[in-house]
Length: 228
Image (cartoon, rainbow, N blue to C red; front, side, top):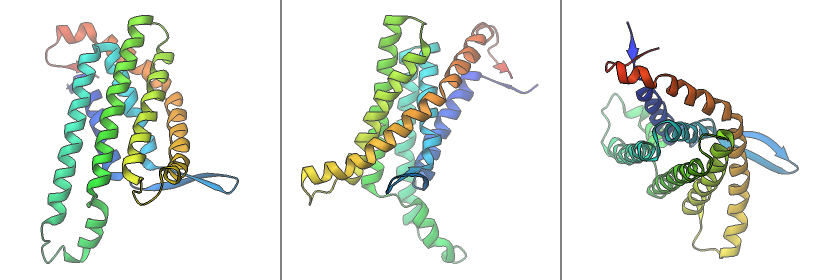
């Protein structure tokens, strides 16, 4: 019978969301207009809240140390993805692949600045989320999971969004005030949208925690994994 360890599956989903966000997050799509202001979002908006939800689930069930280990693994995966992207795009293409090389480079050639901004923002945001969630759990115990996960996500996603936008799009040739006016117009709507997605996905955190907690006894009994 097909068996899989539930924690392994959750970590795999976490890494998938991280890598897919890095590879495909460069595309934006139109959401709606607020007056003359057009609100767009990256396609990664559907994945980033899942990343934070997964880390909250792991923290709730397995503790802060295990969640931090998973986040560090995600950071290493982003770093490896950046390195391989550069290697893959600088290698000369074969004659058969030559016609599609420009499209390949357009998709996968990530700038150093954007890549570093993404890596730093992800590290700070995720580790902040785990720290806040763990501290609130010390105070509240297992109560108010909805409050703990959303407070941790809202604060950490603000750091994530602000750090990424500031590092990626701050223009040195312009004044600080001019930069802040422009960047805040990107940061605030995008952060609010992330918060909205986090609230919507709160029920999945409850389901994920129950799903893992239900398997706790089985995991200790079956070293070969859990039946799904």
